[in-house]
Length: 446
Ligand SMILES: C[S@@+](CC[C@H](N)C(=O)[O-])C[C@H]1O[C@@H](n2cnc3c(N)ncnc32)[C@H](O)[C@@H]1O
Image 1 (cartoon, rainbow, N blue to C red):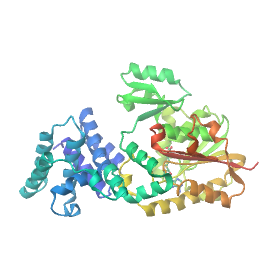
Image 2 (cartoon, protein in one colour):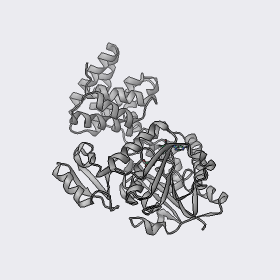
Image 3 (cartoon, rainbow, N blue to C red):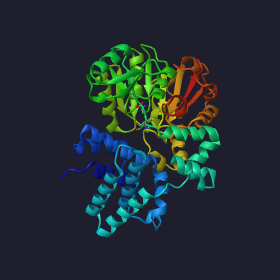
Image 4 (cartoon, rainbow, N blue to C red):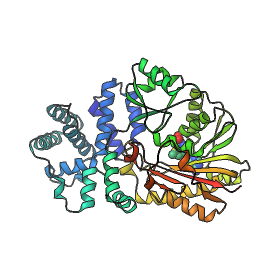
């Protein structure tokens, strides 16, 4: 029997709550399998992401109506209440009566009469009551945490690293929908031509503001478009597009991309090189190599070669490269707009643990840079322990490398002065409404 949108949303959210899946992968799979039409598919995405994104606020709203500790509720009951309240508070187009009715129907199907009665009682009482003010929360960090639905430990780190004002701006930005951004494949077309083609296919697209190869999709199923199928565009955030500018590879060069899957930056590098020279793309996970190969094929980039390898083993290799990219695995705290479950699944210990892996990859990758060549380190996190501190520790142990202050001149945007520190750039999500990102350019002595 096929599922309704809310039943599908409940299934996805319960799995994510139990840390059994990543939201974007599970949502893609559910959208494919549940046979939902485009409208229901969009509603499913909105309910799932919205409920995860606003989890702490939703629990704050729920608490006055539940006698026991929320943690003692069955996971599916708590999640059902959260997703219902999310719709009542944040989705104007869904009538509240319909939300309550469907929640009660689902509760009846999944549980016993007592549970459906409780769900009915809580949601009806919530409907009648006034929402509690956040001003009732005395502690300022806790207040921001509940209001913006970010964990306290993460806020403390950000306030320490960026100050109160930037942290609040980052929290506000993280609650906004992420833009759908495409990169134009300049080996095949121009930005104007792509926008023209997309428009003729019924897709609303405009030139991106900060990068010369970016296109923002305002409406339409871009991944089903001919322009996408013909390899004229690739999904990529504007911040992430800056990495290729930082690395500035030239046609004919020998380039190494050490953490490459699914190939967003590898393909950008090959496009910038006009498909001349070679880009060797590595990734730890053999099953991800075919993702890189598929993208290279779709975009017509024969200069890309993809292989499985733990980048930490590069010390044992002999080849040297003009340009080396370490787009390191990271906590992903810069992409909370797109992947809100990261807020709840990652811990402070993860930051420390991943910073160690980043340092090891960077150190091994640096052995493959030619004299006078360039090494770029990037992440989609805003945590300084994974960014500036990783670079500073690297420079201490590698006196043959120095920060390349010319990075600023290669970037496609006017960088906010406070975000640039010698050869290191931090983009906060609120700066350009793009992903939070870090890029450091390191030059090896000639
Ligand atoms: C941030 S993602 C890379 C995204 C990619 N550069 C892009 O633009 O599409 C980090 C990648 O590093 C890979 N990875 C993790 N540890 C690695 C290691 N020790 N060696 C090589 N790749 C690794 C992960 O599998 C993941 O695909």
